[in-house]
Image 1 (tube, rainbow, N blue to C red):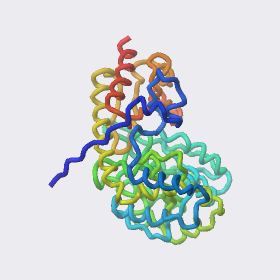
Image 2 (cartoon, rainbow, N blue to C red; image 1 turned 90 degrees about the vertical axis):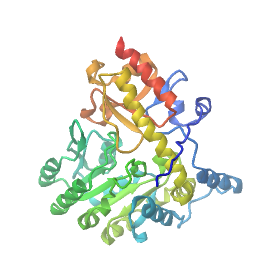
Image 3 (cartoon, rainbow, N blue to C red; image 1 turned 180 degrees about the vertical axis):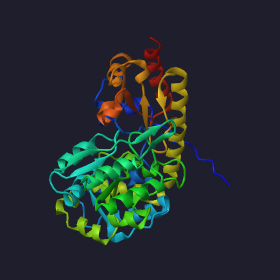
Length: 388
């Protein structure tokens, strides 16, 4: 028996403009900000209660050695992702990219090559370089139905000496949820060549089709033997300013690596970040998450309809997960970086496609985690340019 879920309502625009985060402070009020990955919804009530109680108590000190993150995440993974995680394999840090760079430092040597799969979240490139390694680009393969891992390209890079793979699943910016079969094949390749896979799974809770997301470490015994996962509640629950992320080891050997990281890796976790993540991962927030998914599901489809109507030459595949849309505007001849023209002439701020790699030329990334009316206004503004 299906249960009807009421979509979450976005915060009114006049209240959003009172926020002090990047999304609402980078541009003037005549710009619709749809670039950075912040959403426009109120916090889950359990998070609000946890943070309000901490402020009331003056509980603003240092994060304790055992902040409850391990238990909260293990419960969430079992309940929401059908993933049984060994508590001894769970560690924490300030944010996902912080976790990625520290794991890379531990499993690679200076100059080692790390595979990334563009178009991909821009900090992936910086993170590899921060760790002292070199980026080895193996672009996703694309066709009319979507994106997939280029397993032949990955094998060629591994055979040529790449030592690690930085995976994004669900993928940012395309919203692709990689199949269990492709993940298992990736794990087999990495094990065959003695490489490590680090999987950024921050968008996993926002997968629309129930059961379609497979945590990398769960996909096969090989994945568990060579893999790490790094994730956070920050994207799903809009907590980017509260520093907390989870690092998960696939096996005891990787747990030993995480346990051996410098003590400040864990120490960088913010107390409010831990409190908020714990509340987000609790069953109290499950209903809120279902309502958020209902709202985002409607918006990802609305965006397809709006583009078809108002920007008909745009190419957009409805994402499998997340609130970010990867849109190809090349047909309009607005240059390699159409976000520049759209900001200047339509007053809509979108993420710059080329920052995701050369595959992003002619593309923009649109954040549709907002009120449907705001989404419509943004596309209408872009549509005026398309008709000019």
